[in-house]
Length: 376
Figure 1 (cartoon, rainbow, N blue to C red):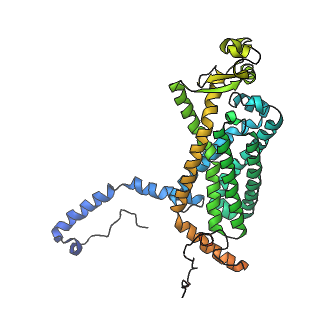
Figure 2 (cartoon, helix red, strand yellow):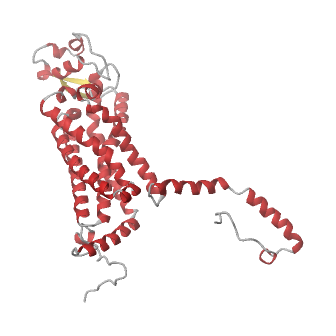
Figure 3 (tube, rainbow, N blue to C red):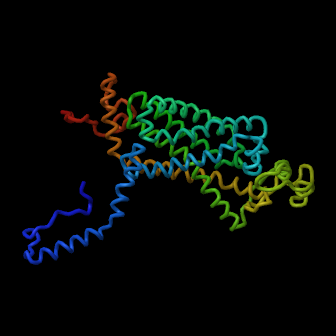
């Protein structure tokens, strides 16, 4: 097989050289061929072998999968320890949250959320590996139904705890509601389209759903940056109850050791009186400093809602850009959908699912080999 850098062999007639000069010309070409950038040739043939081994036909698809899927996978693996609610989770959760999560309604909510969403994070990336999907289609379908069920239940758990999660501010609650809603819409649309054998739309909605779910991973990147910025500014405050603060000061966590008795009253004199200032509420400076858990908790409470809104917006826009840049793959899958829908006897083959022709005024999609019908 000729390499990229191989050229047509030169002859005296084609080069226009005299026969006496041809020998020198040939020697120069041999030197050039020896100095050709062969490492680039080897690299250009090496990477296709890597991503094609996983079933990918385009390099950019493989790199996007590697970045986003492995990010979700490693994030989930790092959070598996939090399934131990009374151990690792109680020590590592944002200071102040365990005060609510430790019992009752909110304990049930966080348990439901973690025990459902973490398995989704482990299963979802493998759904996008073409070789696994094509070779083990029954397993792919089973994992898909499992993801659908666990995502729905996990979203219920998230809605149960949103009032107290990271302070439970209106910004946090609204962001959780929006994220839960769009993930449910996305996964329901994916299920409906595969039920209708509309593979192109199933692909689009599953990619959307994965990107939506990935917003929480990006939020964990944005939050530390925002917290450090707030600490540098050193003028942001949140509020906590004295009872919550007393609980924080009594706990040994990953953020700090338990404080000696009387430390809370010394730092926050309002809490020394029953029904003190603002009926037991105190202002806490948001400050990421180990040993001051109340400041760390306040900083996380103030940045979670902002981070989740920002990352949800970026992920929604980003996934639509990706889908708009891959129309060839969508068209290929639509042609496959047309054939399968035709064989299954479905109405309107090629557009049996939630295609744009059924929602807007897009031109009628024409199957391969057929002429577009024109109105009178």
